[in-house]
Length: 112
Image (cartoon, rainbow, N blue to C red):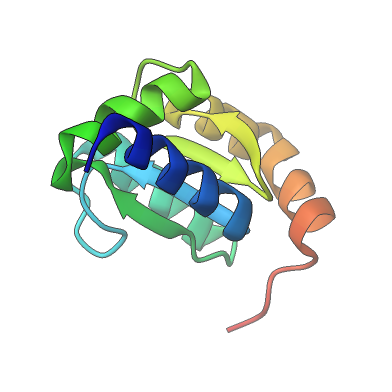
């Protein structure tokens, strides 16, 4: 995958997925604590994010940082809007802001 192909693929996924996490590993097998923490937060809120493993491709890993102008992974998008990384997600979850944002953008979480 070239750099340009990576940026195009990133843009397509950001626009297509309602709740997207560019992460190290997968939602079922995170390969770093920060990525795992973000997935846990969303699941605790009744949401299942789409995870894209940036470790599978260097162009993707570097491209996502350029696309968002954010230096770290994971990176969270809700309905195409960049939210931030793990620290911001944790802070928003603790304040209740994340739940409010998800409800506004995606509707209420489905009960299990």
